[in-house]
Image: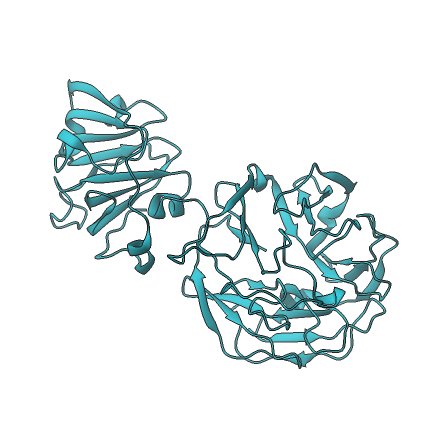
Amino acid sequence: MKRTTGLRRALAAAVTTAASLATLLTAAPTASADASRCPQGSFCVFQYAQFGGQMKIISSSQSTLGVWDNTISSYINRSDKWAVAHTDAGYSGNSSIQIDPRQEYGNDDLGWHGYEGELDNKISSIRLGSTSWEADYGYGWMDWTSMDHPRPAGLPAVSRFGDMNNDGIADLLERADDGKLWLLNGRHDAEWRTKGLLIGGGWNAMTQLVRHGDHNGDGTEDVYARDRSGVLWLYPGTGRGGLKPRLKVGGGWNSMREIEAAGDLTGDGRRDLLARDTAGVLWTYPGTGRGGFGARKKVGGGWNAMNALAAPGDMNGDGRSDLVARDGSRTLWLYPGNGRGTFGSRVRMPYAWPSNEPVLATGDVTGDGRPDLMRTIQGQLYVYPGTGRGGVSGPEANMGWDNAPRVLVF
Protein backbone atom coordinates (compact mmCIF):
# COMPACT_ATOMS: atom_id res chain seq x y z
CA MET A 1 0.00 0.00 0.00
CA LYS A 2 1.23 3.45 -0.87
CA ARG A 3 -0.51 6.71 -0.14
CA THR A 4 0.11 10.44 0.03
CA THR A 5 -1.76 13.12 1.96
CA GLY A 6 -1.60 16.82 2.63
CA LEU A 7 -1.30 16.32 6.38
CA ARG A 8 -1.72 12.56 6.78
CA ARG A 9 -3.59 12.53 10.08
CA ALA A 10 -4.75 15.16 12.49
CA LEU A 11 -2.86 13.49 15.31
CA ALA A 12 0.42 13.56 13.42
CA ALA A 13 0.95 17.19 14.40
CA ALA A 14 1.05 16.07 18.02
CA VAL A 15 3.77 13.50 17.54
CA THR A 16 7.08 14.44 19.15
CA THR A 17 9.81 15.31 16.68
CA ALA A 18 12.29 12.87 18.16
CA ALA A 19 16.01 13.15 17.76
CA SER A 20 17.38 10.99 14.97
CA LEU A 21 18.00 7.38 15.85
CA ALA A 22 21.44 5.92 15.30
CA THR A 23 22.18 6.40 11.62
CA LEU A 24 22.67 3.20 9.71
CA LEU A 25 22.74 4.37 6.10
CA THR A 26 24.95 1.99 4.17
CA ALA A 27 26.20 3.16 0.80
CA ALA A 28 26.50 0.90 -2.21
CA PRO A 29 28.33 1.73 -5.41
CA THR A 30 26.57 2.81 -8.57
CA ALA A 31 25.25 -0.27 -10.32
CA SER A 32 22.89 -1.29 -13.08
CA ALA A 33 19.21 -0.50 -12.50
CA ASP A 34 18.09 -3.70 -10.80
CA ALA A 35 15.96 -3.99 -7.66
CA SER A 36 17.58 -7.33 -6.81
CA ARG A 37 20.78 -5.58 -5.73
CA CYS A 38 18.86 -4.54 -2.61
CA PRO A 39 19.68 -7.36 -0.16
CA GLN A 40 16.91 -9.56 1.16
CA GLY A 41 15.64 -8.15 4.47
CA SER A 42 16.59 -4.55 3.58
CA PHE A 43 14.79 -1.31 2.75
CA CYS A 44 16.66 0.45 -0.06
CA VAL A 45 16.38 3.85 -1.72
CA PHE A 46 17.89 4.79 -5.07
CA GLN A 47 19.28 7.92 -6.64
CA TYR A 48 17.44 7.54 -9.94
CA ALA A 49 14.19 6.10 -11.21
CA GLN A 50 13.81 2.36 -11.75
CA PHE A 51 16.43 1.53 -9.09
CA GLY A 52 19.24 3.35 -10.88
CA GLY A 53 22.31 5.18 -9.60
CA GLN A 54 23.59 5.05 -6.03
CA MET A 55 21.73 2.88 -3.52
CA LYS A 56 21.35 3.33 0.24
CA ILE A 57 20.18 0.73 2.75
CA ILE A 58 18.08 2.30 5.49
CA SER A 59 17.94 0.17 8.62
CA SER A 60 16.77 2.72 11.20
CA SER A 61 14.62 5.84 11.31
CA GLN A 62 16.24 8.98 9.92
CA SER A 63 14.89 12.39 10.96
CA THR A 64 17.29 13.95 8.43
CA LEU A 65 18.96 12.37 5.40
CA GLY A 66 22.19 14.36 5.06
CA VAL A 67 23.61 14.15 1.54
CA TRP A 68 20.59 12.08 0.52
CA ASP A 69 18.17 14.90 1.31
CA ASN A 70 15.95 15.53 -1.72
CA THR A 71 17.81 12.99 -3.87
CA ILE A 72 15.63 9.84 -3.73
CA SER A 73 13.74 8.81 -6.88
CA SER A 74 12.87 5.15 -6.28
CA TYR A 75 12.82 2.53 -3.53
CA ILE A 76 12.09 -1.08 -2.67
CA ASN A 77 11.24 -2.49 0.75
CA ARG A 78 12.37 -6.11 1.15
CA SER A 79 12.39 -5.85 4.96
CA ASP A 80 9.77 -6.71 7.58
CA LYS A 81 9.52 -3.03 8.58
CA TRP A 82 6.93 -0.48 7.59
CA ALA A 83 8.27 2.85 6.35
CA VAL A 84 6.87 6.36 6.01
CA ALA A 85 8.86 8.85 3.93
CA HIS A 86 8.24 12.58 4.49
CA THR A 87 8.99 15.65 2.43
CA ASP A 88 10.39 17.61 5.41
CA ALA A 89 12.93 16.77 8.09
CA GLY A 90 11.67 15.56 11.45
CA TYR A 91 8.99 13.31 9.91
CA SER A 92 6.86 16.24 8.78
CA GLY A 93 5.84 18.07 5.65
CA ASN A 94 2.80 18.43 3.43
CA SER A 95 3.21 15.06 1.72
CA SER A 96 4.30 11.58 2.71
CA ILE A 97 4.19 8.03 1.48
CA GLN A 98 3.62 4.85 3.47
CA ILE A 99 5.58 1.85 2.20
CA ASP A 100 4.46 -1.68 3.03
CA PRO A 101 6.93 -4.36 4.12
CA ARG A 102 8.14 -7.35 2.10
CA GLN A 103 7.93 -5.96 -1.42
CA GLU A 104 9.72 -8.35 -3.75
CA TYR A 105 8.90 -6.77 -7.07
CA GLY A 106 7.56 -3.55 -8.50
CA ASN A 107 8.80 -0.35 -10.08
CA ASP A 108 8.33 2.05 -7.16
CA ASP A 109 9.33 5.33 -8.76
CA LEU A 110 8.46 8.56 -6.99
CA GLY A 111 8.23 10.43 -10.30
CA TRP A 112 5.05 8.69 -11.39
CA HIS A 113 2.33 6.37 -9.98
CA GLY A 114 0.13 9.47 -9.69
CA TYR A 115 2.53 11.34 -7.37
CA GLU A 116 2.65 14.24 -9.85
CA GLY A 117 6.16 15.17 -8.85
CA GLU A 118 5.36 16.00 -5.23
CA LEU A 119 7.69 13.28 -3.89
CA ASP A 120 10.39 12.73 -6.52
CA ASN A 121 13.70 14.11 -5.19
CA LYS A 122 11.79 15.66 -2.28
CA ILE A 123 12.16 13.11 0.55
CA SER A 124 13.86 14.56 3.65
CA SER A 125 13.12 12.03 6.44
CA ILE A 126 12.11 8.39 6.75
CA ARG A 127 10.70 6.60 9.77
CA LEU A 128 10.62 2.81 10.17
CA GLY A 129 8.40 0.77 12.47
CA SER A 130 7.35 -2.81 13.12
CA THR A 131 3.73 -1.71 12.50
CA SER A 132 2.20 0.91 10.24
CA TRP A 133 1.13 2.82 13.36
CA GLU A 134 4.69 2.94 14.70
CA ALA A 135 6.01 4.12 11.35
CA ASP A 136 3.36 6.85 11.33
CA TYR A 137 3.73 8.14 14.88
CA GLY A 138 7.03 6.91 16.26
CA TYR A 139 5.58 4.70 19.02
CA GLY A 140 3.89 1.32 18.99
CA TRP A 141 0.80 1.93 21.13
CA MET A 142 -2.44 3.83 20.62
CA ASP A 143 -2.69 7.11 22.51
CA TRP A 144 -5.45 6.24 24.99
CA THR A 145 -6.57 8.60 27.72
CA SER A 146 -9.64 7.77 29.78
CA MET A 147 -10.11 11.49 30.47
CA ASP A 148 -8.00 10.92 33.61
CA HIS A 149 -11.16 10.51 35.68
CA PRO A 150 -10.59 8.33 38.76
CA ARG A 151 -13.39 6.00 39.67
CA PRO A 152 -15.25 6.64 42.93
CA ALA A 153 -13.88 4.85 45.97
CA GLY A 154 -15.75 1.87 47.38
CA LEU A 155 -17.24 0.53 44.15
CA PRO A 156 -19.03 -2.82 44.54
CA ALA A 157 -17.29 -5.97 43.32
CA VAL A 158 -19.42 -6.07 40.16
CA SER A 159 -17.82 -2.77 39.08
CA ARG A 160 -14.20 -3.52 40.01
CA PHE A 161 -12.65 -4.49 36.68
CA GLY A 162 -10.88 -2.84 33.77
CA ASP A 163 -7.98 -1.55 35.90
CA MET A 164 -4.81 -3.61 35.44
CA ASN A 165 -2.53 -1.39 37.55
CA ASN A 166 -4.92 -0.66 40.44
CA ASP A 167 -4.67 3.12 40.09
CA GLY A 168 -8.44 3.69 40.06
CA ILE A 169 -8.50 4.77 36.40
CA ALA A 170 -9.81 2.64 33.55
CA ASP A 171 -7.18 1.24 31.23
CA LEU A 172 -7.02 -0.81 28.05
CA LEU A 173 -4.86 -3.64 26.80
CA GLU A 174 -3.82 -3.46 23.15
CA ARG A 175 -2.35 -6.23 21.07
CA ALA A 176 -0.62 -4.36 18.27
CA ASP A 177 -0.34 -5.66 14.72
CA ASP A 178 3.17 -7.02 15.42
CA GLY A 179 1.97 -9.12 18.39
CA LYS A 180 3.23 -6.83 21.15
CA LEU A 181 0.89 -6.42 24.12
CA TRP A 182 0.66 -2.92 25.58
CA LEU A 183 -0.97 -1.55 28.70
CA LEU A 184 -2.68 1.77 27.94
CA ASN A 185 -3.03 3.15 31.45
CA GLY A 186 -5.37 6.03 30.67
CA ARG A 187 -3.15 8.73 32.20
CA HIS A 188 -1.74 11.65 30.25
CA ASP A 189 1.13 14.05 30.73
CA ALA A 190 1.01 17.84 30.62
CA GLU A 191 0.83 17.73 26.81
CA TRP A 192 -2.02 15.16 26.86
CA ARG A 193 0.21 12.37 25.64
CA THR A 194 0.26 8.90 27.11
CA LYS A 195 2.99 6.29 27.31
CA GLY A 196 2.21 2.62 26.75
CA LEU A 197 3.73 -0.05 28.98
CA LEU A 198 5.08 -2.99 26.98
CA ILE A 199 3.95 -6.26 28.57
CA GLY A 200 5.60 -8.54 26.02
CA GLY A 201 5.62 -9.89 22.48
CA GLY A 202 4.34 -12.98 20.73
CA TRP A 203 0.65 -12.41 21.45
CA ASN A 204 -0.40 -13.03 17.86
CA ALA A 205 -0.16 -16.70 18.82
CA MET A 206 -3.42 -16.18 20.75
CA THR A 207 -6.82 -16.38 19.06
CA GLN A 208 -8.81 -14.97 22.02
CA LEU A 209 -7.83 -12.50 24.75
CA VAL A 210 -10.23 -11.46 27.52
CA ARG A 211 -10.21 -9.98 31.03
CA HIS A 212 -12.75 -8.98 33.64
CA GLY A 213 -11.24 -8.43 37.07
CA ASP A 214 -9.69 -10.85 39.56
CA HIS A 215 -10.24 -14.53 38.81
CA ASN A 216 -7.67 -16.16 41.09
CA GLY A 217 -8.38 -14.35 44.36
CA ASP A 218 -5.23 -12.25 44.70
CA GLY A 219 -6.97 -8.88 44.23
CA THR A 220 -5.48 -8.04 40.82
CA GLU A 221 -6.97 -8.23 37.33
CA ASP A 222 -6.04 -11.23 35.21
CA VAL A 223 -6.04 -12.15 31.51
CA TYR A 224 -7.26 -15.31 29.80
CA ALA A 225 -5.79 -16.28 26.42
CA ARG A 226 -6.61 -19.12 24.04
CA ASP A 227 -3.81 -20.35 21.79
CA ARG A 228 -4.14 -21.79 18.28
CA SER A 229 -4.22 -25.36 19.55
CA GLY A 230 -7.26 -24.60 21.72
CA VAL A 231 -5.54 -24.44 25.11
CA LEU A 232 -6.87 -21.78 27.50
CA TRP A 233 -4.28 -20.05 29.69
CA LEU A 234 -4.61 -17.82 32.75
CA TYR A 235 -2.11 -14.97 33.00
CA PRO A 236 -2.35 -13.64 36.58
CA GLY A 237 -1.96 -9.88 36.86
CA THR A 238 0.81 -8.27 38.89
CA GLY A 239 -1.34 -5.34 40.00
CA ARG A 240 1.19 -2.99 38.34
CA GLY A 241 0.02 -3.47 34.77
CA GLY A 242 2.08 -6.56 33.96
CA LEU A 243 1.41 -10.29 33.93
CA LYS A 244 2.90 -13.21 35.86
CA PRO A 245 3.84 -16.58 34.29
CA ARG A 246 0.85 -18.28 32.78
CA LEU A 247 -1.10 -21.23 34.16
CA LYS A 248 -2.83 -23.82 32.01
CA VAL A 249 -6.61 -23.93 32.43
CA GLY A 250 -7.29 -26.72 29.93
CA GLY A 251 -7.60 -27.76 26.30
CA GLY A 252 -10.50 -28.16 23.88
CA TRP A 253 -11.46 -24.48 23.75
CA ASN A 254 -11.29 -24.33 19.95
CA SER A 255 -14.84 -25.66 20.02
CA MET A 256 -15.80 -22.18 21.17
CA ARG A 257 -16.43 -19.45 18.61
CA GLU A 258 -16.16 -16.70 21.20
CA ILE A 259 -15.02 -16.45 24.81
CA GLU A 260 -15.91 -13.59 27.15
CA ALA A 261 -14.84 -13.00 30.75
CA ALA A 262 -18.05 -11.75 32.30
CA GLY A 263 -17.81 -11.10 36.04
CA ASP A 264 -19.87 -12.91 38.64
CA LEU A 265 -22.88 -14.32 36.80
CA THR A 266 -23.84 -17.00 39.34
CA GLY A 267 -24.03 -14.85 42.49
CA ASP A 268 -21.34 -16.73 44.45
CA GLY A 269 -18.83 -13.87 44.52
CA ARG A 270 -16.51 -15.49 41.96
CA ARG A 271 -15.94 -14.29 38.42
CA ASP A 272 -17.15 -16.50 35.60
CA LEU A 273 -16.59 -17.06 31.90
CA LEU A 274 -19.06 -17.11 29.00
CA ALA A 275 -18.39 -19.11 25.85
CA ARG A 276 -20.41 -19.47 22.65
CA ASP A 277 -19.73 -22.69 20.77
CA THR A 278 -19.74 -23.12 16.99
CA ALA A 279 -23.34 -24.38 17.08
CA GLY A 280 -24.50 -21.13 18.67
CA VAL A 281 -25.02 -22.43 22.21
CA LEU A 282 -23.97 -20.05 25.00
CA TRP A 283 -22.43 -21.57 28.14
CA THR A 284 -21.59 -20.18 31.57
CA TYR A 285 -18.41 -21.54 33.14
CA PRO A 286 -18.59 -20.79 36.88
CA GLY A 287 -15.31 -19.58 38.31
CA THR A 288 -13.70 -21.44 41.20
CA GLY A 289 -11.99 -18.33 42.57
CA ARG A 290 -8.61 -19.95 41.86
CA GLY A 291 -8.47 -19.25 38.10
CA GLY A 292 -10.26 -22.39 36.94
CA PHE A 293 -13.89 -23.26 36.29
CA GLY A 294 -16.53 -25.69 37.48
CA ALA A 295 -19.04 -27.64 35.42
CA ARG A 296 -20.52 -25.47 32.72
CA LYS A 297 -24.18 -24.44 32.60
CA LYS A 298 -26.15 -24.02 29.39
CA VAL A 299 -27.58 -20.54 28.88
CA GLY A 300 -29.36 -21.29 25.62
CA GLY A 301 -29.08 -21.70 21.85
CA GLY A 302 -29.45 -19.36 18.91
CA TRP A 303 -26.53 -17.11 19.84
CA ASN A 304 -24.95 -17.32 16.39
CA ALA A 305 -27.45 -14.59 15.50
CA MET A 306 -25.08 -12.35 17.44
CA ASN A 307 -21.73 -11.24 16.02
CA ALA A 308 -20.24 -9.70 19.18
CA LEU A 309 -20.50 -10.18 22.94
CA ALA A 310 -19.25 -7.81 25.64
CA ALA A 311 -19.47 -7.91 29.42
CA PRO A 312 -19.98 -4.37 30.79
CA GLY A 313 -20.63 -5.18 34.44
CA ASP A 314 -23.86 -3.92 36.01
CA MET A 315 -25.45 -1.77 33.32
CA ASN A 316 -28.92 -1.44 34.86
CA GLY A 317 -28.05 -0.82 38.51
CA ASP A 318 -29.47 -4.02 40.00
CA GLY A 319 -26.11 -5.22 41.35
CA ARG A 320 -25.71 -8.12 38.90
CA SER A 321 -23.33 -8.63 35.99
CA ASP A 322 -24.95 -8.20 32.59
CA LEU A 323 -24.15 -9.01 28.97
CA VAL A 324 -24.50 -6.96 25.79
CA ALA A 325 -24.72 -8.59 22.35
CA ARG A 326 -24.87 -7.14 18.86
CA ASP A 327 -26.98 -8.77 16.15
CA GLY A 328 -26.61 -8.72 12.37
CA SER A 329 -28.92 -5.71 12.07
CA ARG A 330 -26.49 -3.47 14.03
CA THR A 331 -28.72 -3.58 17.09
CA LEU A 332 -27.14 -3.84 20.53
CA TRP A 333 -29.10 -5.75 23.18
CA LEU A 334 -28.73 -5.72 26.95
CA TYR A 335 -29.19 -9.11 28.58
CA PRO A 336 -29.61 -8.43 32.32
CA GLY A 337 -27.98 -11.03 34.54
CA ASN A 338 -30.26 -12.88 36.97
CA GLY A 339 -27.53 -13.97 39.40
CA ARG A 340 -28.06 -17.66 38.51
CA GLY A 341 -25.74 -17.89 35.51
CA THR A 342 -28.32 -16.93 32.88
CA PHE A 343 -30.14 -13.80 31.78
CA GLY A 344 -33.52 -12.13 31.87
CA SER A 345 -35.47 -10.66 28.97
CA ARG A 346 -33.31 -8.59 26.68
CA VAL A 347 -33.68 -4.83 26.23
CA ARG A 348 -32.78 -2.93 23.08
CA MET A 349 -30.08 -0.30 23.53
CA PRO A 350 -29.85 2.99 21.64
CA TYR A 351 -27.80 3.79 18.54
CA ALA A 352 -26.65 1.63 15.65
CA TRP A 353 -23.57 -0.53 16.26
CA PRO A 354 -21.92 -1.48 12.93
CA SER A 355 -20.94 -5.12 12.59
CA ASN A 356 -17.41 -4.34 11.41
CA GLU A 357 -16.52 -2.32 14.53
CA PRO A 358 -15.57 -3.68 17.98
CA VAL A 359 -17.74 -3.23 21.06
CA LEU A 360 -15.54 -2.63 24.12
CA ALA A 361 -16.50 -2.83 27.77
CA THR A 362 -13.91 -2.13 30.49
CA GLY A 363 -16.24 -0.76 33.15
CA ASP A 364 -16.39 2.86 34.27
CA VAL A 365 -14.29 5.04 31.96
CA THR A 366 -15.78 8.46 32.78
CA GLY A 367 -15.32 8.31 36.57
CA ASP A 368 -18.99 8.47 37.58
CA GLY A 369 -19.17 4.91 38.93
CA ARG A 370 -21.35 3.66 36.08
CA PRO A 371 -20.08 1.21 33.43
CA ASP A 372 -19.63 2.58 29.92
CA LEU A 373 -19.32 1.14 26.42
CA MET A 374 -16.91 2.04 23.63
CA ARG A 375 -16.74 1.59 19.88
CA THR A 376 -14.85 3.02 16.93
CA ILE A 377 -16.24 5.47 14.38
CA GLN A 378 -14.18 6.28 11.29
CA GLY A 379 -10.80 5.53 12.82
CA GLN A 380 -11.44 7.02 16.25
CA LEU A 381 -12.53 5.44 19.54
CA TYR A 382 -15.66 6.85 21.20
CA VAL A 383 -17.00 6.38 24.73
CA TYR A 384 -20.74 5.93 25.26
CA PRO A 385 -21.30 6.84 28.93
CA GLY A 386 -23.61 4.47 30.77
CA THR A 387 -26.75 5.89 32.34
CA GLY A 388 -26.90 3.33 35.17
CA ARG A 389 -30.41 2.36 34.00
CA GLY A 390 -29.46 0.01 31.18
CA GLY A 391 -28.76 2.60 28.49
CA VAL A 392 -25.97 4.82 27.22
CA SER A 393 -25.79 8.49 26.30
CA GLY A 394 -24.23 10.11 23.24
CA PRO A 395 -20.67 9.30 22.18
CA GLU A 396 -17.59 11.25 23.23
CA ALA A 397 -14.40 11.09 21.12
CA ASN A 398 -11.50 9.51 22.96
CA MET A 399 -8.53 8.45 20.79
CA GLY A 400 -7.29 7.58 17.31
CA TRP A 401 -7.57 3.95 16.31
CA ASP A 402 -5.19 1.55 14.60
CA ASN A 403 -7.16 -0.35 11.93
CA ALA A 404 -4.44 -2.92 11.20
CA PRO A 405 -5.93 -6.42 10.86
CA ARG A 406 -4.35 -8.10 13.92
CA VAL A 407 -4.97 -5.27 16.37
CA LEU A 408 -7.12 -6.30 19.34
CA VAL A 409 -8.14 -4.01 22.21
CA PHE A 410 -9.78 -5.37 25.34
